[in-house]
Figure 1 (tube, one colour):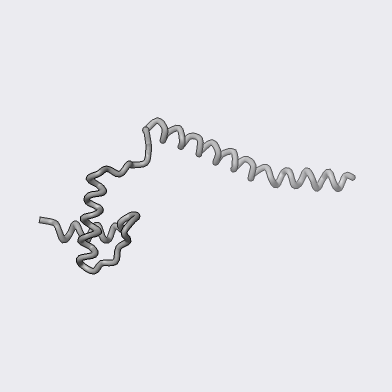
Figure 2 (cartoon, rainbow, N blue to C red; figure 1 turned 90 degrees about the horizontal axis):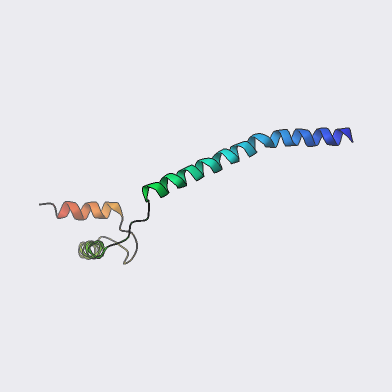
Length: 88
């Protein structure tokens, strides 16, 4: 019986640092959420002008035989190529 209690006490002692770390991380997450909320952090919404420019970039890429998807995020390298080609 004493061996069982000793083993249980040893297991609990080993688990305590992990439990402390979980509590610390949960507090950090809660703090980060509060800071984001205070800053008014929200996902950027796509505007009509963004969609128009995306359409222009896609059309330009296709005309220049650059593979690009019809939907989704435009890769930064393609945006850079478009901007370089249209820099005046």
